Structures are given as structure tokens and as C-alpha cells.
Image (cartoon, rainbow, N blue to C red; front, side, top):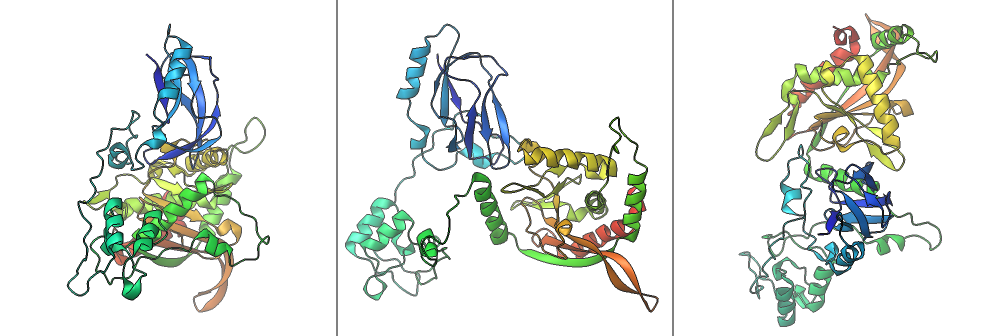
Length: 450
């Protein structure tokens, strides 16, 4: 019996991926563990290994195809002794996965972030029953919604509540063109149950409207890649759903810079004559955040609607810039790792991130994060929280600044840090305690070494 090869879910949140390259061609023998394809997600390119033995009978999705849905049929494999042509013919007869409902499968929605998504075919979903009748006139106790008979019939057939549509007919009457616009997504809909007179949600202007603002030929359209689309979606969701507030302080880092110099100066040389490690300021920041979370454990949390997740370890994500976007690899249990271990781990993560070779478990999850733009000369900034984190630390540049010591002006190396906080999970006073603990470790780095 032919074996269907489906688009794998390489992470719990993956819904689509790009089929970057086929490593096997039709007619090739396949053994368990063989890499048959390269799958590209928004963050990484990963090898897809076969789990069965047979012959690759038919490639359904050609390499280079973008936005292939998870669990979509991508190839068919003939088992041992099976007719390859006959097995390949089943792929032609199979119904394309793209014809399935676009609603995410229950497995993708229900799987917790720490568990892999189900690898099997999606369960069939019950078809949503269309409303038996769209209301001719909806009332919220204050105003009726007027609509034409044709508009009501079109809304009923499309399963749209006519009371959610903004009418453009005489006196705000909902007419047929309004229903058609709602069906095509050309107009926003009120939230379910919202009063008829309630304002419509904000809707970004269309691409055509934005392009009309510029002279034709004065710009070039560069299509968004998968990474940029995901970054845009997640950042928008973060700012819309997470109530951010910000806390800023200044750290004097003369002792930190001195300790860093001592550590790097005493680093042993490798066979190539180069130091075996080189600790950065960012490595100190990662360690300081981890220890601060252990000192203020109520800040080491994740908000969920059903309850607060209180984490036992400090898994610190670190924003790394890569071509086309950024990724946040995670230093797991950073509170137990030395500065040298953190430094070597981050160098490995950064190198593999730039070639998109990180594994999902190396950049998903985490309890907090660091974003350091100080290396680019940025004095101070506020970072956007990366769900499921409740905090993120923005690190500015270290620079010499005038300070007052014992009534006299002196020069000190200082660095401004800003903590972005999810107010649902961490209140102001608690956030201030967490930031103060970070500052304490950065200004007294010997505390990180004991």
C-alpha cells in the first residue's frame, strides 16, 4: 500500500513551510533515516528524514514551493515490492490538501507549546453549520440595523451576521454591495455581539491605496518572505494583546568591564594560538538576568488565561540579528551555567542562526529575553515582549558619562537598560525589584562568579 508523505510540523506553532529542496528524486530508494527533503520555516531550514522504507514514487509538491500547509500531501512512496507507477498514480487521484478547510486542525490548536504537533493526518473537521437565518433587523436596545431583502439573503447564504456589516446605502442601510465587500474581506466587520452603532475595528489601508500615494516607478516591490511575515504577525499580536509598561535604570559597569578584561586576558590558548573563549558584556547580562530571576522568582512567570506559569529555571532568550530578520535562541537554565559556557553557547547559536540551522527547541519557549542594540551605538530603547515571555531587557551602549560622586564630578562607564513588562503577569513594584536585581549583579559582577 502506498505511503503518503505529508508536510511535517517541525514545531508546535508551525502552520506552513517552504519545501526548499528535494534530496531524493522520483525512483530513488529510501531507507529510514534518509534525508528526503529540506523544509524551510520562518526561522530555520531543517532536514526531513524518512521513517519508512520504499521507493519515492511521486513528488507532488515541487521544490521551491512556498507556504505548504502542515499535513499537506507532498509525495508518495511505494513500499517494498509494490508497483511504483501504480503508487504514483494514487497521488494524482488524491484530493489536494489545499481543498481542505483552512481552519487549523484541533491538534495544532490544542497542543501545548512544549509538545510537538501531531504528525499524522489532520482529523476531519465538522462543517460549520450556516445560520438558519440572518436577522432581518438586529437590535441592541438603542438602534435597529436596516438591510435590504437581497442583502439579508446574501448574508444568510454566506453565514454572515448582517448586524456586523457597516451599511453604505441610504440612511446606513445594508445593501448587497456591503455583503459582497464583507465576503471578500474588503470591509471590516464589527465584533460578534457588538452594538449596531459600535465603531468598526481598525482596518489597515489596502496595498493599492498605499501605493497610490507614491509616484509610479519611484519604488520597487520586494515581496515579504516567510520570516518577515511571521515577525510582523507576532509583533502586532504582542503589542495588541500584551499590556506593556517600561522601567529604565542606569548601571555603572566599571567593575564589569574590569572583570571581563581579567577573564579574557587569562583565557588559555587553543592549538591555533587563539583564546579558547572571549566573554562579552552581553554574556554578563544573560547571567545577571538569570540570577535575578532566581532572586525574584515571582517575575519568572508566563501569563495564561487559566493560571500563571511559575518557572523553576531561567531560560533566557537572546535576540540575534540574521539576514531578513531576527531570531531568539535560548540559553536554557542559564542560572547554572558559567559565563564561559554562556559565551561559547551563544557563539554557536549565532553562527548556526545565520545559516538557519537552529532546531525549534533551541529558539522556542524561554522565560525572558535580552535585546542588545548597544553594540550599534544605541543609547536607550524599549523592546517588544516576545510571547510567551513576560519581560524583555533592552540594553543600550556602554559609554563614559559624567557622574557625581561625593559632591564631585567624575567619569564612569555607564549603560542604560530598559525592562519591558507584561502588566498582566508582573506588576510595577515587582518589575522594579527584578530590574534592581539585574542592576545589582551588573554593577557587582563578582556576585555572578560565586
